Amino acid sequence: MTPITTQDYSIQFNSDCYSALSNYIQNNTFSNIFILVDSNTSDLCLPKLLAQLNTELTIEVIEIEAGEQHKTIETCLGVWQTLSELGADRKSLMLNLGGGVVTDLGGFVACTYQRGIKFINIPTTLLSMVDASIGGKNGVDLGAIKNQIGIIKTPNMVLVDTDYLSTLSSREMRSGLAEMLKHGLIHNELYYSKLSRLSNLTLEDLDQLIYDSILIKKDIVEQDPTEQNLRKSLNFGHTLGHAIESFYLNHKSKALLHGEAIAIGMILETYLSNKLLDFPEDKMQLIKENTIKVYGKIDIPEADYLPIIELMKFDKKNIKGNINFVLLNSIGDPKINQTTTNDLIIKSFKFYSN
Image (cartoon, rainbow, N blue to C red; front, side):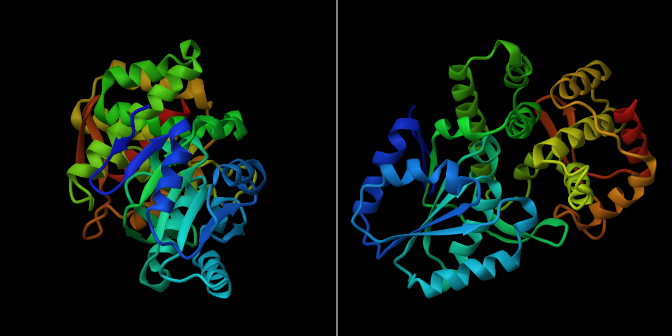
């Protein structure tokens, strides 16, 4: 696949990834290389990367615990301390090998260690390939509140090797698909329709859909890198989705993957779009049907509605205490900075549950 070039870095694909990485290392004067992994990618993905690294530089591996619950400042402190103890300096290179937790946290660590060292993201999940590793958002959670601490700074390169997807469960693959579905809903109805016909897709189709999804996000981010206007559209489904994810994060029996929560959020926010912006009723029902077909339906008791709504006050899109949503005029036509009432949000939960 042809590399995707952004204003600041390139995104390399599959067989071209490792030659591009070798050239990048050879053309710079790095002192050493640090690879950040989690307890999953250490076993499943690191051996392949190490076999492809063609360098005489010292390579050190730093491992963190897997899972959103470890995306914290405390984990960063451990990584910063390890970097210091192993002699990392401003000429070190950091490779973040993992899903969104690793690329978000690793990018944040790299941006702040000695005021910034170069880093490359190597996403290993579908979610991180099409979302987390692209666009320069780096950061960690603050308690149960997602991504409250962070910085926007792009990586020096992104390597997308879809072979790593073979290490994922079907649940993890579905989680990543949610962000791709979102890209279709906010940008391109034809793309959304292709994704909705999952049973007809081949692996080659998936590679192309991943490529197209990255192009959609790249186009949006380049027009609004600091998320003042258009880039906010990428948060469709996330205002309620993040609150749902945060609320159930510490409920082991109900803990949701990011994409699972966003899938629910997209149904809820499509309902709000119908009520506030006259989004077509038939398409609202189709989106609900398509989404539940892939993700099933979880039980959200009415007692959980208000605590989830309360968590939305921490959403980063909020202005002067107003909870701001991204809603849809139609598929491919998002509208940012929309507000609503708690009563209508509660009705959206009931629409999902019925």
